[in-house]
Image (cartoon, rainbow, N blue to C red; front, top):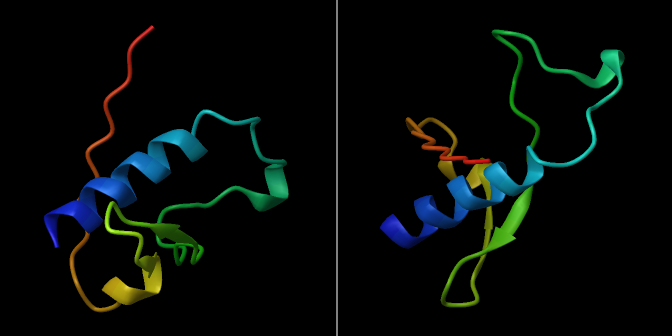
Length: 64
């Protein structure tokens, strides 16, 4: 399970480095997070919706 969370945090960090979204597509406080999928280190497919009803803590570390 910790590997899945690490992958999820990494995926979100990488997605955040892309081009900014148009104003209409931005999320606001209280909005439901969009579902996305990724692959964990064992090759299993995971979805954000796999964690529905659970607390997901995201740690994003960046540097310049």
